[in-house]
Structure formats: structure tokens, C-alpha cells
Image 1 (cartoon, rainbow, N blue to C red):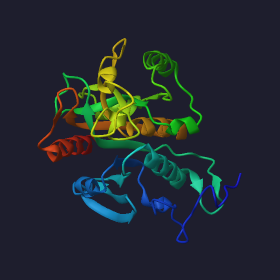
Image 2 (cartoon, rainbow, N blue to C red):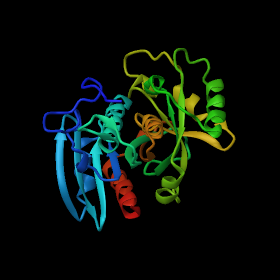
Image 3 (cartoon, helix red, strand yellow):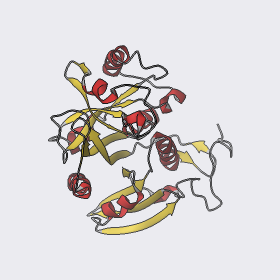
Length: 286
């Protein structure tokens, strides 16, 4: 089936609409970061940078560490941006732009998020680098896509839905991390369920002036348990990354630099050092 010009928007130069990238611009291993200023903080570790492109909040550098080709791209904040980035990354590798048709042989990218997060458990200190075993979405992104859950995902999501059943209008979704990437990059890291919120303030239990509709959201998160599974941290992208990557046939892992303790009401006085620790750890293991 030929994709319409409205469904797949290609720029006059042959690049994909938002990312401004050509199919040959991206590597099979992609690191995503939220902050566009973090892209050069990753690529400065490359032995060679072959490409730098940018449009809006989407900055991309592609280069090499040794013989390993790597792309790092900024996504901006939130799962609405994840929807754009992941669909367009997939289009770059799995759609023939000339014919506007899906390729017969599909490629699976390895996608690693290096992002920031706040811990919701008292035993996870600031400075921790934590890997998400699951992404738990409290946003609405995956209500627009069909998902196929594994038995393990269905069982855990059932417990989550029962526990959070009183949250009016919120229907969580859940996706497991790719096991191979988890073993390769996070074999010695603490792990846990990462909750993804659709905002930074009330959706993450913060209160400034507007009154929160969900009381004690952090307490609700940190008291959930299902077997050995617990919710460890809270941010704004991981669940969308995991779910959309799986839906599109890609492998994904989220690495979280813990900058805040939400239960101790603390924020790091040296956040860049924690983020750089996460970046260095991942690049050493690529």
C-alpha cells in the first residue's frame, strides 16, 4: 500500500518531516536524550562525528566510537514528542521514500534513552543510575495504537489497574524493557518500573499554585507492589519509548539519571555529574 503525502510527510530535499533526516543519516544504534544541549555531551565522546543536523528541538549527531556507528538525537520532553521521533526513525529505516511503501525486509533499531528522573522510593539515592525494567504510562499516547502484550505484561498490568482503579479518567499502559539490551547495558544497575507522566507538575505529584486532583500521587506510586515488582521512579518519556518501540519492532532500554528524591523532597546540587555518569557508562558498554 502506498502511503499518502498526508500520512508520510517528506521534505523537498527527501528528508523526513520533523527530524529533517535522510535514511542514510542514522545508525542502527540510537541514543535518545530529552535536552537538545545533551546531544553534544554525548557526541563529544565519539572518535569521529560525520553528521550534525537539527530542526526545532530535534538535534541529531551521527558518528563513531571505534568502528561502532552511533546516532544521538534529542526528543524534547514528553511522549507526544516520542510519538514523532519514533515513528520518523522507523520510517527512515523501514519505508522506501521513493515508492512510499513499507520495505519487505524490516530493520530493528537498538534505542537507548539516557534521561533524567526522580526516585519515588526512599532507598534509591540521588546519583543512582537506574534501568527501567518496565515503562508504566499514565499518559494517553498508546490509547491511539494497538498493543500486543506478553503474558507477563498482562499479569502485571492487571495488578496495576486494580491498584489504581480509583484514578478517574486514567488508563495506564505497560511495556517491558528489551531483555537483551537490559543484560548488555544494565547488568549491574538497580532496576524497577518507571512511571511516565504527561506533565511535570500536578501529573508528577508537584503542587505549586493549582490544586492537584490526585492526592498523594507519590505515595500511591511508591506503595505499589506486585511480587518483586515496584515502581521506582517517575519521568515523562520511558513508557512511550518502550511501548512504541515494541509496536514498531525495535528494541528499547531506558537509563535514568536520578536527580531528585521525591520522598525526601531533595534535588541534586550537581545534576550534570549524574547525567555524565550515565552517558559514560552506556558509551563504554556499546
